[in-house]
Structures are given as structure tokens and as C-alpha cells.
Length: 259
Image (cartoon, rainbow, N blue to C red; front, side, top):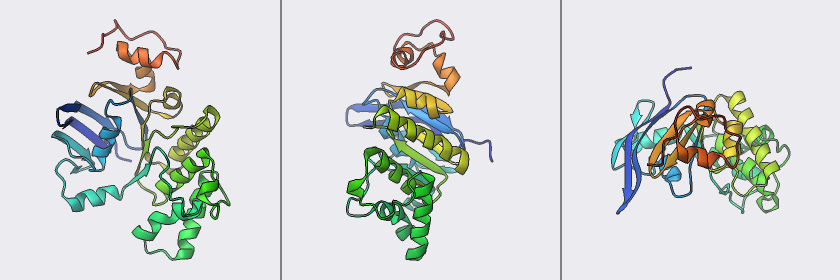
């Protein structure tokens, strides 16, 4: 496995009209690890992740996926990069007209030449991997919230991508179901060797699954590092954000006030 980061943000700026959302964001996402990006609502977390797959283009700066700069890539280059990614959307984004298994198999229909039987076998394999064996023919409307998230995860990994992007994977779930999803994400990383990028405001989930955590605040990445480094942050905003859900060790130095 290469030591080079799989994704690099270099001085990324993005505004929508007069609203400045990203204000010079720079950081590396390591290959084969889970990186979590946290922050209050409206700080640009989802905007950040859309730049990775070229759904948004920065006003300035660079977003490298290996040797492709998504800020200046052609449409064919962007399409090739997107095929290396899976995505678990906040609400699962399942098709209610399809069964659980048909939802998982959906990407295989459009991106492979597998037969129907092969697609079903692959989807059943991924459903078993997310601890939903035998649910291929279950109507989507009959799934619980946690089951929908797991079906969404199975669909995100069915093409065996290099990177999976998670947008609020525990949104709307009770604490016990959230713990189950966290455990599943951790196991997936170990078994599949994928790179996971998680956008969330769930501190407990971050501490459960992440190798590295970054915090976006007012359009800037004000802290980024390993979980231990993050917990020892001396950024006042970071410590205020964490203290309701985590027992914090002492800060690494004098507190730095909000920017």
C-alpha cells in the first residue's frame, strides 16, 4: 500500500454568491484509514465532500485524487475517478420500488456486464457482509431505519470501490443502532482495506470509528489530526464542541480563542 495520501485538498476556496463557504481548506486524507470531518451544521462539510467527486468545482485551489486534480479535470477524468468511489447518503437514498437486494444490485446493472444471476449473487454477498443475510427479496418499505442504512452501505461497496464517502451515517438512528453501524464501518475497513471518509456531527461515532478527525468551522479546518491529537486540541471551539459528548484530557497548550 502506498504511503501517499489518496486525497489532498490544497487551499480550496468556494463561495456561493456573497456566501463564502470554504476559506482556504488544506489537508490530506490517508489511504486505507477512516477520516471523519465534523463541525456545526452549515459549516461546509457536505460542500467539502462534493468537491472530492467533482460535483462542485472550487473557486480556487486543488483537490487531488491520486494524480488527478478534480478542480481542473475533464468530464471523462471525473467519471473515471467517480467509479473509484462509493457513497452512503444521509437518508440511505434507496429506491422504494425495488427490494433490498435490487437496491444493492442496482449499480451492477449499469457498471458491469454481469448476468442477472451474477448480480443477485454479488448483492446477496454484500448483504451478508452488512449482517442482512436473506433479505434480498425484502420490500424496502419493510426495512427499519438501521436496515436501510445497512442496505445503503451494501450498495456503496458492491462495486468494491477504493473510497467510500459517508454523509451523516448515523443520522436519525437511536444510540444502539448507531453503535451497530459504527461497528460495521470499523469491520468493513479492516476486512476490505478501503478508505472511508465520514461527514458527521456525531462525536461519539467519530471516536468509535475514526483514525483521524478534522473540524470545519467558519469555512476553515481549524483542527486536524489523530484522535488523540484531536482530543488534546487547544482550540476553544473544538473543546466546546467535544465536551458534551467526551471526557476530554488536558489541552496541549493555552486555549486558542475562536477565529
